[in-house]
Image 1 (cartoon, helix red, strand yellow):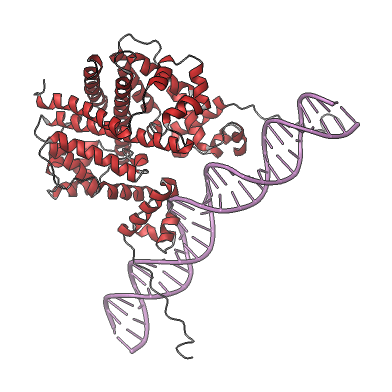
Image 2 (cartoon, helix red, strand yellow):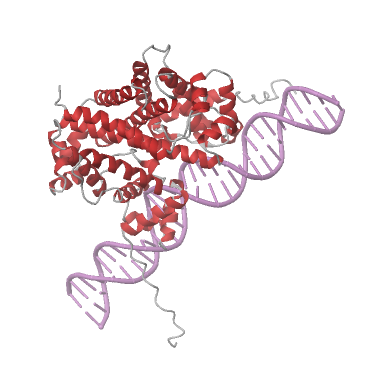
Length: 230
Length: 230
DNA sequence: ATACGAGCAATACGGTGTATCGATATGAGA
DNA sequence: TCTCATATCGATACACCGTATTGCTCGTAT
């Protein structure tokens, strides 16, 4: 029985950690959307059996939580600006950019409280920016309002983007001509204001539209923050 | 071979239509959340095989679309008020109430463009309310901003509500004392503003918080709508 | 040398969405 | 009235899913 007769010992499995698991899951999601993320496929990317993952997470939902938290690291600004308005604006824009890079984020954003380290850090940065500008309840209302806005806006933007991609047409072209159902509905005359909006509205840049709405909301918040509470 | 020996002829299957299918699906979702909705279970409620549904819908996603559109009928106000601000506010509040009745709506809201008859009617009502108050692009920005706000706010509210239900504690109690992870994180001192918010903030009524944020956003929109565009 | 304990892979279960296809009942045409 | 085409439905099947269970295989401690 020479060495060559004996097989090499089975290679020890590649060590795993949450970081690698989450990275694999994010890669999968970036390529094929959230629905392409299955524990089996994530595990396969790491040359592991599906069950191996259960040492690191105990549920698929938890994997999603980790994914969101990981991406939230991209949102944190390097250094805090002195201007609360600028800080909030930057956070909103960075969240949007993260969602454009990882469209699946739109499906998860706001879906559950984000309590991971990066999620908490984002919240901290947000609160720190407006801390002391008013009583705490007003401040809370302010940050919640702003984040409700950009959460909703991002979600809609991604939803529209997907719809456009699915039909290969810009939103307005599609509404105007090629979406047979919508066209037919508009032709019924039951939606005059909508028809007008579709035919007369211009196709605005998504980022500009996001920025405008954000500015308005920040205007509103500014009015409440700088004035002492009634 | 008497009559009694012969079985009765097989009863023809109960006729189906989208309305009945959607109603069954909504019932299922109301009881057990979106994840309780499976084509098999929906079909079973209607004494049908799963494949039968494919005559009425061609994909599960389409069923979700129908569900959303159905619920949007609950949102439409009976008669339009003359005041645009009141109309937008009512639409927002009714959407929120619909989401409280059908929590799964929060998972779907804003997830894709809603082009069903009721969805279009809601959009029409929204646009009609502000029609003519400014140039069309400003008007679009206005309704999109408001709806981004309440979409996001509703989603967060439902998310928090679920988290509270899962732990049996109010959000603040849970953050303060019982969420071991959060407590530990706050104790690190790395999140001073957040810690202050958690410990000093009061537990505000969700509806009041929603209404306040909404008012702020409407304030902002009002400022842009009543003033001619720059 | 042996016992133990952790980590891992394999297997299995009950579910999912949906494609395919054969039976069957219904309505039309002869 | 009988026959045939057609639409509809049910069963079956497939590929996949998340996860519980089980038993093996190691490295380590005794």
